Image (cartoon, rainbow, N blue to C red):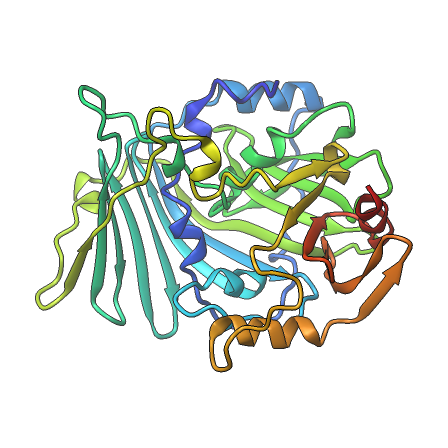
Length: 367
């Protein structure tokens, strides 16, 4: 069990929509501006983990820059209305505000507009400036509770803190934990905690987490791929303020002329099997454990089925059809390769994915 599971303050951002709505510029990926290493009292990895466990964040605001270079083919625009693929390349800027577990806000900024996700108590608003449209939903609709539903919690990282939480939650004997160099991030002195897989079958070389020396808050998160000394993915605060934001930051009033859509959160009903809820597919399983876990799923479409021309599915099908063909005693299919993960799509309708070498995917496909 992670030492952080009992620290709800470490899961402090708004729903996953904040992570998937960003569209940013195309600046090249590079490390954030380096500064002289500060002189800090020595601390062990165990002490840094305790620092994270005992941290108490009452409020903060700041600017986060995310940069990604995962070595993937162009994907942006293949899924209309869903900009998740934009996170896989380029540079993105976010403004974040936090004032306790029930008040958060993320503003995702690009050259053409802004998208905001605002959590204020049980109300969650998503607003897009380009179309002047907003979506609203209410969390924790069960009588007598204001606790948000589990599905409202983020599953994609939007800040170094969220990314660090996900990484630390996965620490087990397959992980080597050490202390890296001290650093200065957003003008703050920071220690660096380094996580590395012991299994060389993983494509991940290291995760590096810069932790504020005084506030014990993650300020920078980097992922290095095997064989590289430059981050394939990084996010860091470029400016941070630990004062509690004003309540006005979390109040949302739809702009004049805007369109507002009310949404509901689907929940499993009594007697309804979990497999009937989207995202709970019994055909999804895992092979292996730790850093070399492989996710195995089966496509909904029948093998060989072709989507209608002009549809998003057809565009995706065209992209996948251009991937390198691979085959072996496990069968045949196509391989999508990246710096940090590989995806195998077999001709018999399976999808296998993981932060592992292609050989590990082929091994899992034999099972």
